[in-house]
Image 1 (spheres, protein in one colour):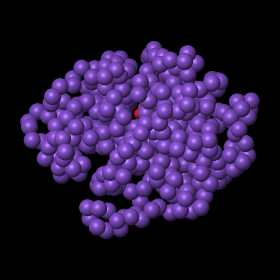
Image 2 (image 1 turned 45 degrees about the horizontal axis):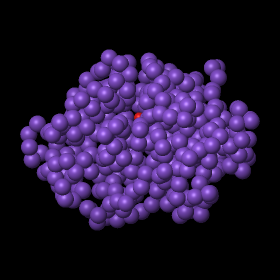
Image 3 (image 1 turned 90 degrees about the vertical axis):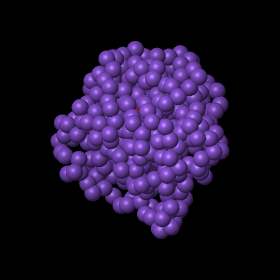
Image 4 (image 1 turned 135 degrees about the vertical axis):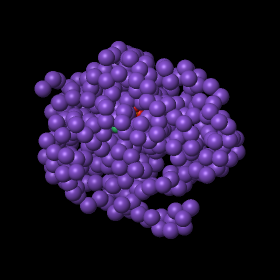
Length: 406
Ligand SMILES: Cc1ncc(COP(=O)(O)O)c(C=O)c1O
C-alpha cells in the first residue's frame, strides 16, 4: 500500500474559533426541519481494542435529515440565513416564511458547486423553499451522485475541471436573483460559508449532550476528514471552548488533495493542483477555504494524508462493526489507523491505550458501485451496528410532540 504522509506543525498561532451568537436559533431551526433527529453516537468497542485505544466513538451521519451525509446541516442554515439577509431582512427563520420570501419574485434560484454531498443538501433546501436550483460538479463525478442531485429537482452542470474550477464557475453566476450557497469562501465571500460552518456545530453539540447524559468521557483525540476545511473548522471552533483540555486534533486528507497539510507546511494558504482523483470525492479539494484556514491552522495538532486504499480498508472495518460508511465518511478512521502505524507520530500526539477518540462518519454509501467493489456487500446487507447511546428526547416547536432520533 502507498505510504501515508504525516506532518506535525511545531508552532501554531492560537485557534480563532468561528463565533456563533445565534446558536440557540440555529438549533431550533434544525429541529424544525422535516426528518430532524439526533444522529446515532456509537461506541465501537472491538474496533477500539483492535486499534489499541480506550474508546472509539463514531458519530454516524450516514443518515441526516433524510440525506446520506452531514452536509444538510450547513446547507440548510446557510440558505435560510442568506434568504433572510439578501431578500427579506427581518423575516423569521422558519420554512414557511422562507418559502414566501423566496418565491415572492420569479426567476430566483440557488446555485452551488459541489463534489457531491453539499450540492445535494442545497438542492433539497431549494425544493423545500420552492426555488429552482443549479449545481455545478467537476468532470468525473460518479453518475450515482449526479443522479441523486437531479433527483432533488436541481439542474446539474458538469464543469470540465476540478472541484475548485466548479467553485469559480458558481461564483460567476451570483446576481440579485441567484444566491450562491457555497461551503468554501474566497475574498469578499464569507457570510454564507461562515453560516455553513455554524450549521455543522449542531452535530458536535449532539455529541456533547449524549456523552454528558450518559456520564461518558469527552474525547481526548479528534480525527477530522477535510476537503476545504469547513467541517474541521466547525469541530475546532466547538472544542476551542474547552481551552487547555480541548482534544488533540488531527486532519485527514487524500494523498493527492492534501491542501490543508500543504498550507500547514508552507505557513500560508496553498493550492494543490489537480487533477484530484481520489475516491474520497467529498475531500477532493485543492484549495482550503480562506475563512476556515485560520481556525484549522490554529487548532490542528497533526495532519495525515492517506492513499485511497486506507479509506477502503476503513470502510470494511466499519462495515464489520455494522456501520455503513462511504469513502469520505470512513477517512477519519483511516487517518487514525495510519497514525497508529506511525508510532513516533502517534507518541508525539499522545495517542495511547488510554485515548478516547471521536470520529464522524460523515456519509453513507454515496457511491453504491464503489461501495460494493470495496466492501463486497450491499449497504443494506451491513449491520445492525451496536445500540447507539440513547438519543435525546425533545419537544418539537412546530408540532408540540416528543420526537426521537430513530
Ligand atoms: C462526506 C464528506 N465528509 C467530509 C467533507 C469535508 O468537508 P469540508 O469540505 O468542509 O472540509 C465533505 C465535503 O464535501 C464530505 O462530503
